[in-house]
Structure formats: structure tokens, C-alpha cells
Amino acid sequence: MLDQPAFRAELSAHYDLAPSTALAQSMSDAYARMSRVVSPPDFAVHAPYIAAINRLKVERNAVILAHNYMTPEIYHGVADVVGDSLQLAIKATEVEADVIVQCGVHFMAETSKILNPAKTVLIPDMEAGCSLAESITAEGVAEMRRRYPGAPVVTYVNTTAEVKAASDICCTSSNAAQIVAAIEGDTVIMTPDKYLAQNVAKQVPHKRIVWWDGACIVHERFTAQDLRDFRDWNPDTRIIAHPECPPDVVAEADFSGSTSGIIDYVTRERPGKAMLVTECSMASNIADELPDIDFVGPCNMCPYMKKITLEKILWSLHTMQGAVEVDAAVAARARIAVERMIDMSRRLAA
Image (cartoon, rainbow, N blue to C red; front, side, top):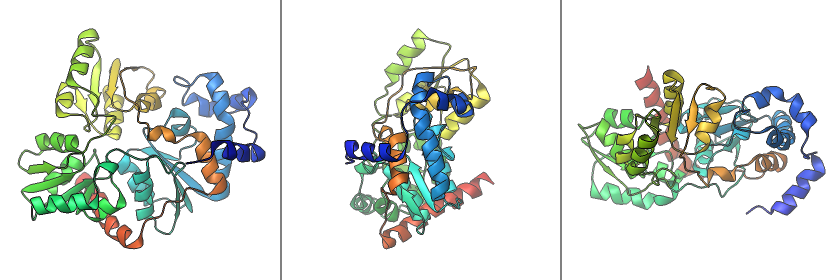
């Protein structure tokens, strides 16, 4: 765990991080991208960190990859690439920078390191974990293989490198149904998200899909009754759910898709009001791009994603601490599963 008083003292000794209205006003272009969800006083607090991080990125030859669940000041202020897990995994294979700062959770940083073994991959907080990644081990994959001999294992990217290494191919919420449909075998093992697997099973009825008993702490908390009650109260709202939600929740929604799929949907459909049944920062990050849409609650917050802050990003780049390492043998096997996913996704999209 970071010694916050110590690292704040260190940062203060090297950077002027006092809130600055003048600096914030000089960064009006950056603020315009988040003005609907970040107040001017709050941006005056964020501006010194954003300015310092963007300078350090140049000095370190670093690139910041940020998941869609990052807070707006990270998503709009310092990120070079934003997206869902698939988009970030693909971009991680294309970046030319020496340093990758992964603004997301630990498995995402591991994935970037797996795909870029020669690069330095930093995560601003090593404790940014994931309930799905923690729900299964390589031994769990082996158990599923024993229960369903010969069945291929399709593993969600929300897993550790060891679990990826024990699998045949990875998937994300945006490509899971396509990969399961395309992979050989009548029975397919999906790990670790039982709800994603159950939702995919409805889309790929010609396959027998079996699953590990894991779930996302953000998405499993939504209930179908929540959605029915909200629709009764506000019937003209378009309800959009992530496929990590339970199937009865997805059935109540008007649309279900990955984070990138959700963004594409609301951009294309332009509903007057939209409720995103997913992590809270999603609506905040697209609100300024779609000012004609009124994003309404409820949402659930991911405590792991919120461990990543501007202060910790600055500390990571300043000290070059938080480097993610993956055992070479494990990385080599995991890389096969991840690259198979990327290659199959590209072929299916062609």
C-alpha cells in the first residue's frame, strides 16, 4: 500500500500542485471535454496534476491507456487511448512508446505486459484488482477441463495471466458471442463470468455453454425489479445494460453491449434519456460528447477502478514505480490466448 503522506510530500517537492484557476483557464480545451460533469472548482484542483502528467509523458516517452470506467479527469485529461478491454488490448500491440501506464485494473496491465514484454508497463495502484479475476485460478480451469473433457476454454480477459495461460482463447464482452460461435466444439467452457456466459448462451443457442461460478461485483448488484421499477417511474428512458449483468436484467433492457458497444449505441440512437446499467463513470465520460442525451441513474461504482487517481498516475510516472511483471513462461502461454482473440476478432470483423 502506498504511503500517501510520504508520496504527497515527494510530489509537492517537485511539482506545484496547488489548485489554480489561472492554469485551469489556460486549459479550456481540456476542460471543455468534461465540463458537464466536472465543476470549474474541481477542474482547478485537477489542472496542475493534468499538466504535470502530460509533461512527464513526453519526458518518459509514455502513453496512457485508460478504460472507459476511469473518472472524467483521467479519461479526458491525460489518457492517450480510451476504450474497453478489447480496444485497449489491441492498442497495446500498436503503441511505440517505451512506457505504458495502464489506467484500469491489474489484469489489464498484465495483458499489456504480456503483449509487450520488452516495454515498461506501470499501474498506478497495485491494489486495483477485479472480483472476476480473483474468482478463478489456473486450477479452476483445470477442474473445468476435467469435468468437460475436450471442450475448449474461452476465458474472459478479466483474469490473471496464469488463468489466460491455462486457456485456449480469451474473449471480451464485445466479442464473446462471436468467438464462442466460431470456435470448434459443441460444448464450450466459459470462465469466469457466469452471467456473461449465460447471456452468450442465449445468442449462440447451437452451442452447449458451461461456466465457472464468477461474477462482477458492479454488475451482479443490479436486479430486474430495479429496471422494472425505474421504467414504471420514467417510461421514456432507454435502458442499456452490460452483458455482465444477470440474464433477467439484460432481458429487461432495451440494449445490451460492451462498454464500446454502449457508446456506439447511444451515439447512433441518440435517445432523449438513457440509463446505463453499468459502472458509474461510463455516462460521465460520454456526457460531453452527447449533450443532447440526459443520462440518468442508477449506476454502481467499481471500487477497484476508482483506486486509480491523477495523484497516483503522477506518482507512478515520477518514480517509475508500479511496474507489472509476468513470468516469461506464463506470459508466453497467455500471449497465445490473447493473440488468438485479437486475430479472431479481426477476422470476424473483416
